[in-house]
Amino acid sequence: MNAHRKKVILTDIILLVIIAAVIGVSMIWSRTIEEKFGLSYYAEVEVDDDTGSDSDGDDEIDTSEFAEMYVHFVDVGQGDCTIIEFPDGKTMIIDGGENNDKVESAIDKFINNTLPQDFKYFDYAILTHADSDHCGSLDYVLNKYPARFVYRPNVEAVGTSANPYDDPGKADLTSDARSKNTAVYANAVKSMYYKSADMNSVVYITDPADESQTISGGAGDDKYTFTFYTPLSTKYTGDGEWNNYSPIMILEYRGFKFAMSGDAEEKNLGEFATKVQAAKTDGVTDKYDVFTDTYSVNVIKAGHHGSRNATTPDYLDILTTETGARSLYTVISCGAGNSYKHPHAEALARYNAIGVKDENILRTDKAGDITFAVRVNEQGVYNLFYGDKATAKRNVKLVFTYKKLGNIELKWAVVAWSVFAIIVVVAIVHMIVFCGERTGGNGGNDKINNDRSRGGGKRGGGRKR
Image (tube, rainbow, N blue to C red):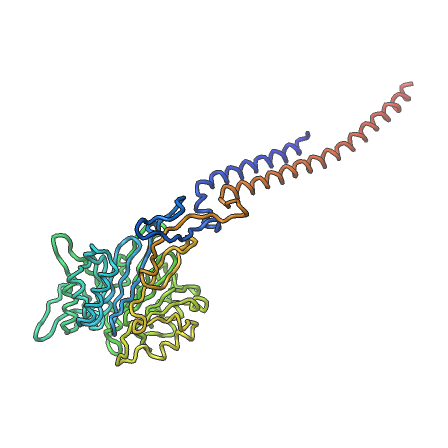
């Protein structure tokens, strides 16, 4: 066997050894690989309410083993209240609706029916702005369930002339901060500064420039973020003056995104659009860089209860694409027969114009409480679900299941080593064919060389005689 043949055979053998080693190491991540390539999935199996068991007991995964996130848009009539259950068990409340018994009762009922029985406090509370339909009952909620961390607008609470109030956060406001002289805002601010032997609330003046205010939790694939992008001014006056203090906020988990904006109107939205546009060319790496031409959220909480002034084309263009809009959900929190005629027809038309389906425009005045869940589907893949919590989180177990080819389960080990076997066969054929060709060629050369040797012997013999 000549050197070239040895080199070819050795190369084939080395490649086979390397492939075998790679496949062997890949077995460490076999479950991940199986899920990635769709070889396995989780099938939902209904379980008995009393025993929590089912007929099959092999390799079952309970839904509680998978982190889930719930975003609840609570029906508080003509107002706003959003409650979020993060995948790590933390909770958030955004706004507290109007100041009346009906709203207090609605929020109370929702908390009692939805959150754990031993629920005592919120991890986060956000007041978007100082208007009563957002801060009205927040004091009632926070006095019962204080918040560890609170985010409030850059507006001083001074109370009324009959009942003045000394804002404890005044020193944290900017020097040009405006003040608002309503009792409901003063009461809301007062409830934010909770102090006890067990907990002292930390209160921030919402500032998107302060990166430390970005909320995040979870680890690895279960990480979530809640990011503030506006307000970008410290003071607002004129049209929508109080509304424009509302932050544009985006919650993201498992690739699913929720955009919320309180009552932010054209001034605030315009500043946001300008900032996003500038980020494309300013050479600065920051959080506004995420808004590329392909960026698309899954749920938009319509600003200002579906007002025409809080749904601008530029804002929608940033948050979704033509393709994304086809599956986009829009949530509108408004009261039935409200005097503002929310949602405005112009706002609804803008959503329709970008491709949002009518059935995906959800209104609390028609649907009541609206809940979205990010959880695993029947294939064990995280997806977005719309529906109340009882519907979204059924009493099921997830059974790990492999796809089959006939009766053969397509486990990664089976697939990988089957492919390797094919590669081995191809390599053997390659060596046989290559070596055969080389052997055939050498045989012909050997015959010629032998003939020449014999001929040369006769000629040499003749000369010798």
